[in-house]
Amino acid sequence: MELQILKNLQTGLSVRGILLWMVLMGGSSCERNIDLNLPPPQPHLVVYGVVEPDSLIKVSISRNSAYFDPVDLNAVLNLLDYSATITVQSTDSLGHTELDTLKPQLFPALPILQYWTVFNYQGTKIRGRHNRTYRIHILHPDHEIVGETKVPVPSRIDSLWVRSRAFLQKQANPSSQPTARDSQLVQLFYRYRDPQAPGDHVRVFSRIQNEDQWSTAFNSVYDDQFFNGQSLDFVLPRGKEAYLFNDSTTFDEFGLFKAGDSIQIKWASIDRTNFLFWSGLAQATGGSGGPFGAQPVVTTNLRALRGRVLGLWAGYGSVHYTFKVPERP
Image (cartoon, rainbow, N blue to C red):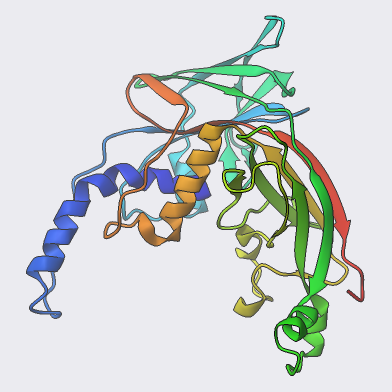
């Protein structure tokens, strides 16, 4: 559902000036009630397509909605659009091509829920391959959209390890008194040796046993602008989406794993456009994209030949890792 924030951006651009004027004019009284009749947003098609190794292509097609409209599962399902004809052409380094027409995933069969996104179209022939180019063409009664992406050859994590919260507390303050719970909660770390060539970009996902959905941290993408060619250690926090339907974890345990968890990591090399899209979305969801903040720049590789489009056509050069947290970390 993270991608549905895009539906608000167009309207947010148009109401920002109105809302700022309201603040200035209403500053002398906090009691004043103002009824605001916001104009409807310009219609966009919201597109998120994913190509990754050994998987069929998946695409989500939906309509945008107004800035203050609710964003929940029912609202998202009601915004899904099945009026498009989607074709994808795959081209390898020798120029060989393959064509796939995606099939709508109609009710009563549920659309595909993955990455917390509802994909309502799926391919039947093409599976992602590293170093291939994928061109998408979306023909819709009100829109015509094209885009191109590539599945990069993946970089790789050097090593993974954990430290208990008790260990980290004692390291920061030797006089601290960690609890038994602190000994069971762990922070996951990884070491990454960046290639010498500049321009490496990645997106990182995680999940634990019995979870179907991949989750991401608030900032899920990284580039090597400041550490090209170096070896550095990073924290890999438990993804925020894992807490959507989990009432058993308190706020101070956010981002931590537990003793005994079997952690799966998806490490996905991405291109520059993919990186800019997700980093811009992280900036918007972090607070700077509201009506009172600076408007985020939405980078995309999709182009509307007719109508308007928001979204991303994403190639992921994915590799997978599994790390088992010891029962006594």
